[in-house]
Image (tube, rainbow, N blue to C red; front, side, top):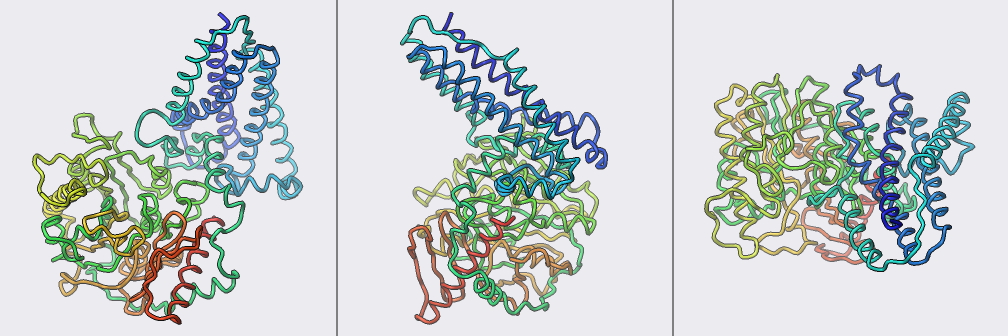
Length: 623
């Protein structure tokens, strides 16, 4: 019986944390009721925050009972009543810390519209400044909430959820089984299941109203991610190479001249826009970019009616970095991704937001799970009117291991966007060129490539889906007034076996396509050096909109635009200029490649790259 008491104690503690999280969520909603009413949010939509927050609550609760699990393990070996006191004091400590966390979030929402994060946490080390900057009444109301929440939660725990455990007789078999089974169950539950992508904050996002997404998101889970992503930095820029004023001056010179002239290649300033993001497409897949023929024959046909940018490089190495680069014009950076931290990406401008201001309806389509890299919360922050992912497709739609195959995603987008008001902006993110490449091809179309053969065939499949989609779109009334932008989210290892720290590895396709392009600019190649970051400025110049908030983006269709590309990897950058490039790892101070013609020019180019990295990472830290 004493062994069953251990299991019962852990189960009751797990239930307590679920109840406690729901309790703090209720306080959050009630405290911010005025903002909820101001946004016209209904009761039932608010209540959904409990449902959508449940999975993160479960994950967090499982992590929190990890320490009692260890205590009871020791108790099964070394008997003593003091172990129960340790569990009680631990629970009290967590209640205090979590209550302090959630109460602080009540105070910051009106000003920051965010959850508590690493940067905000630093303010808690100066309580005098917090008191002086807050209204006195608000400060004391929050103080009352803090003490009441803490005392009530601990009282409920002691009365209803705490079980006194006593071990009368040691049972080493039980201890062994307990040691093996419970950690496995805890780890599986903590990561949200056996799926390939672990649970993250995106799981809680469900509403177009950010306040409900914040209410749904477990505060403990969120602060842990923020601390994990930032703690090692300790508030210092690890990529500091120059005094700040000098770095600013170097970066400003990189962007000179900032001319207003541009080639006006579109027949209208308010086209429909379809953005197609190709998962893991290397330039090696494209014949016109140096790839071997036959891999993407559909893309080659589309080039005839478009503008192919031949000198584009991926800003980062992961999908979430590509998203931030495309939709916010924000360069990728080492160590982390800005999309992982809602408190940071909420300070970024959005392509979608600017288009909606101009009257565009918006939609986003993906056949997989958007929780990867916390993409879902970032996409919802972008304010798309309609977001479609794997859970929105019927079960009878053919799927692979990661989700719905590309052809069916294109089919759904084509059907629904045709009913949208114009002008519209619709984005499709493909998936079949992501490992394990389980596309529905009855037979392989590319019979070479060795270890990358399946990748090449998946590219052939996505290419065929893309081309078929365009052919079907031609029958739609909106086709002639639509600009299609086709770009990779990042590159991929291919048959040329480029080194990871080489510019060739990160070379990707970018194509502007459609009848909306003036005839004289079709079947044209533009060799301007750039990355996905530059899409927003290039597009806005055609729409005759200001790209002011997108400070890192440049217009690829302006003759005056300076040429450079920046690539971020785990601990460093690649910096690419015409006829010069280097890839440098800051952590070990090592140049993987350094292709710069002479020593004086080399010094200038290296200074540029290091200063650019310093300033990008500074903005990331300051967000």
